[in-house]
Amino acid sequence: MDTERSRRLYRRSAPVYDFFARAFADIRTAAIAALKPGHGETVLDLACGTGLSFDLLEAAVGEDGRIIGVDQSPEMLERARRRVEQRRWRNVDLVETDAARLSLPPCTLDAVLCCLAHDVACSREAMERAVSALKVGGRFVAGGVKLASGPLGPLANAVSRTFSRVAVTAPLTSTPWRTLEDALGNLDVTTLRWGTAYVASGARRLAVASLTVAAMVPGGCGGAARESGARTTIELASISQLPPEVQRAPVAVSEAYRFAVANPAILRQVPCYCGCGAMGHTSNAACYLAADSPEGAPVFDGHALGCSICVDITHDVMRLMRQGKALAEIRAYVDSTYARYGPSNLR
Image (cartoon, rainbow, N blue to C red; front, side, top):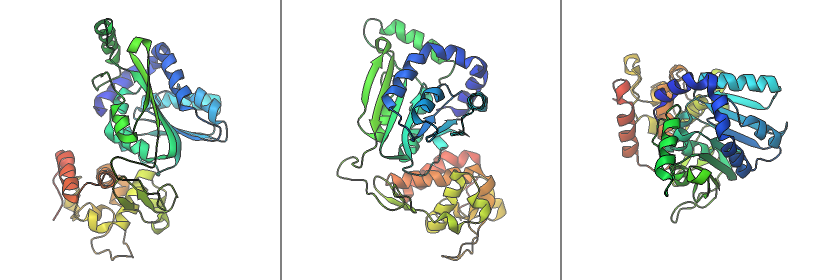
C-alpha cells in the first residue's frame, strides 16, 4: 500500500466522498449484515473513512457497545468526527493511524469490518494486526470491489479500474480477500454486482495451520501479560511497571515499552534507524531503557515517547516473533525496511 499517495487521494476526495459512496451503499449494507454485530459488542471499523458505516453499527451494538473507527486520513476522520458529534454518540472512538501500524490489545474485539478499503484489505500487516486483536470466535468481514470474469469482465473491469483511481493505490484483483484469508483462515465469499464486488467473512479460530495449535495463555485472550502467536509466545511486562507518562501514552507506544522491559536482550540485538546513534543509543532497546539498566529494575529512556520509527521497529519485531521468525530474519527485515531513514545504531 502506498500510504502517502493514499493520503493525498483521500485529501482531495474527502469533500465529495459521501456523495460518490452512495453508489456502493449495497456493498456496505451487505458487509454489515454478514458481520452481524450484536448488542454490547466492540467493533473495529478499519479504514472507517467519513463514518458511513457508523449508523448501522451503532444501531446494532447500542449504547452498551463500542465502535472504534480507524483511518489514516485526517480529512476523512474530521468528517467522521462531525458525524459522531451530530448524532451525539458517546461510544465511538476515532483513531488516526495507518492500519498497518495499528496496535490494539490482543483478543479484545468482537468484530472487525473492512469495507470499501481495498488498499487496507490487501495489506498483510493491517490484516494480521486486526486479526490479532479479535477474540477467539470474533468475526471479520471485508467487502469491496473486485475484477470480474466472463463475457462482461473486460468492460466491467475497465469501469472498476477507472473509478478506483480516485481512492485505490493497490492493483485490483479477482480475489482481494486472499490476504485476509492468509491471516484468518477459510472465508465465506459472496460475489455481488455481476462479479464486480464481494463480501468475505470468517471467524478467528483456535486451530492454525499445519500441526500448530494456538494456545490460550494468560495475557492473550485471558488479559494478563502474555500473548500467544501461531508459533511463539511473546512476553509483555505489566503496564504498572511503566512510569506514569508512558502509561498515559498511546497504546502502541506503551505496548512497545512493555515489550522492551520484558525482552531487553532481544531488542539489544535489533538496530534503530531514527538517528538516535548520535545520542549514544546502541540498539532499539536503548530507545526505551538506559544502557546500564539492570534486569528487574529498569531505568527508562523517554526517547521512544516521541519517535515513531523506534516504536514501529519494535512492533515489527513483535509481529515477526508471533509468526515464529528467527532473529536473523527479523534483523534482515528491519534493515531492509528502515535503512532508508538513517544509519544503524547497532554496536
